[in-house]
Length: 184
Image (tube, rainbow, N blue to C red; front, side, top):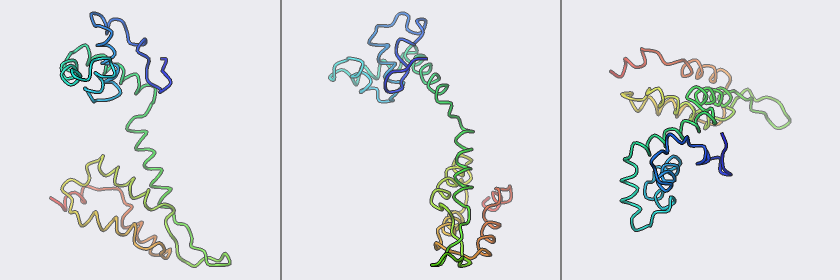
């Protein structure tokens, strides 16, 4: 699969059977729609006049042939990028694990103070939020519970090792059916 300088699949890669019976402007419109859902701008980029772009874009976007080309192009892009849900989830989990690692707080002179901080709390919290949204964990949950977890993640930059372990044991457990039952 060949791409242009912007990483987009070239129009010449679209199979002839998908473009049969279409004018080149219509094919170009479909190609533009694969990269943007803006019908008007796609029509302008395909060479239609700005005055008629809105109505043309609306009409062309409804054609099955256009939709088939858009879907074909998007499938090719997905294959090339090789990003899927599991890849994203795996990387979010890595950010969480790395971001929640305790780092000893050092006193001047290099001795440990007995306190720890999280390596990257904001990234870990954001990744937890994204995973929670993906798994729809927050639907029906009591908002205060979510705020408590986020508050603990941000509460102070330092904490003792004992407090760290207590927090991890309390909040880092996988979601259970029980956690959802409390909100029902």
